[in-house]
Image (tube, rainbow, N blue to C red; front, side):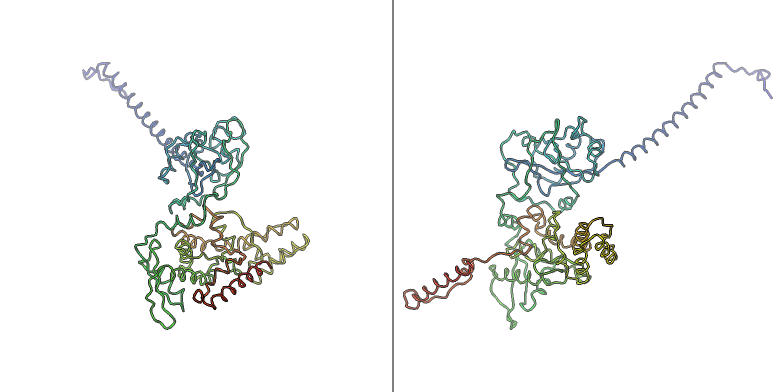
Length: 501
């Protein structure tokens, strides 16, 4: 039905009708534009989320001039989260910022970004492709988390400054930095090509020749406040109990000097002032007691940590680690009974050379010995099936194609038995060992500090044995003194003859 407005005498100007159409059209266009913007913003939101998910983790370290070579600095590795499509300049900028955030002693730049072989990051190694993290990872064939890049002062890399920024002094990182140092870092060797030409290639990353063990201990002992003391009341009849009470006391601090007061067998309190003797006596007896604690297993001189539920409840693993760190830094002896494989693991070294004789469990030791003695493939397969439950528990059960496969099975089981199955208590032990930054020093100077923890055979010389005894001589000029002097000469000759045997 149509309504003719003309019969009512109403006149509507055409311009208004036209304007109404325009307004309706504008409103429709505005609605479309707003929906389009909403879709775009929604899509952009998803894009941002997708982009955030593309962030990956790599590892960054520091390279410095040590002598005439560029060498990575120990304990200076940090994780870095970045975009995989990022290029070298952006990584360099973020790496420098991250390092400065955790190392307040960093020198002012400029810095350069280097591969682990000391070549500058310009192209992807072995190609003309400009470096991007994604391309590098693709050619390398490794996960992002196993990529390590390093930064170095440009003046050291270009050779513009002859001064050495050597790490001759021990570098002690903070506890928070040490936690970052647990990141999995692997150094890859590359043959330099094109623009990635090395300035210096490190041949030996061992200990610096000018660093000595006394210097390391002296550096670690600097935070000790000799004006304050932590008191230990020790009974020689039960050294362990007194030491535990002293270390667990709420007022105890490893940064304070140790005041040790002992009671004699009759219970009389000794009033002597501790000038060092009682402290060293306590620490020596404490290390001997520690060796026989149930938290350790293995033969004498090659002890390793084992899980003990009661010791876990008493937090004995943390306490043992702290006792060792305090003993060494406060001038006492080291334990000298830990297994080399355990010490290498604590120091972050991959070396593992444990043997079957380290196992004190008769059944386990016998099973591993049978596998190790297998003379043929058939015999080896029979032994692996016989002990399949034991091997499967450790994740070592596998098909063997040759007799040589027995070495891998035994080695993997030993590593599981000594390290992997006890990893939780080893981590707690490491936390205690971090007292006074001792664990950091061990990781930076393993060659020098490992002998403090491990047993080492040392031949006693005639001079050392002679110095162990102080003769009580008669007054000078007396006849007895003359005979005693002759006797001392004979005694010294006797020691020399024994040394030559």
